[in-house]
Image (cartoon, rainbow, N blue to C red):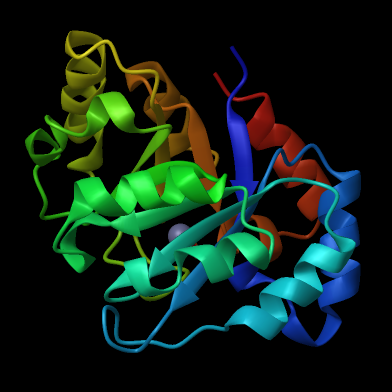
Length: 217
Ligand code: DX5
Ligand code: ZN
C-alpha cells in the first residue's frame, strides 16, 4: 500500500500561499497538513482561522489539521467550519480526551490524537478503538525543520501492536523530520501517513519530492 502524503503548509511561502496550494493540488499529495500553534501548548504561534480559510478556498484535497493548542475542545466546531476534514488534538492538551474525541466525530470530522515524543503510546489503550488516526510526533512540536527523533521507530511498532490488539482502524501518522531516507523505515514499521514540511518545501522541485515520498517503500 502506498503511503498517504500530507505536506505541511507551515513550511510553505506564506506570501504566495495560493500558488503553494495550487502546487499541492497538482502534486501527488493526498492531504494538506495544517499546523495550528497557540504559543501556549508550544512555544510558537503559526496562524489561525483566516489563513486556514484562505487555504481552504484553493485546496482541492482534504485538510489534516494538527491542533497544537491547549483546551482544543473550545475550538473543534470552528475548525470544522473552517474546513478541517481530520482534526488531531494532543493527548497532553486536553483533560477529557474521550469527550474531545466524541466531540470531533460529532462535528463531522475524522478524529486524530497526537502524542509528543515523551508520551507513551500505551496511554491510548482505552481510546484507540474510537480513533481514525494517531499522530506520533517525531520532533517536539512547535517548529518545522527539526531533526527526526530515532525512538519513533519503536513507538510505531508499539502503536501498531496496540491497534491490532484493540481491533482499531486508526492510521498511524508520523510528523516531524520526515525525509526520503527515513520514509521507507517508517513505512516498514507500520506508518500509514507521512507529514513532511521542510523536506518538501525547501527542495528544488517540491512536486517531484512529493512523488518520491509517495513511492517510498
Ligand atoms: C511541528 C509540526 C510539523 C512540522 C513538520 O510542530 O507539527 O507538522 O510542520 O515540519 P518538518 O517536516 O519540517 O519537520
Ligand atoms: Zn504537524
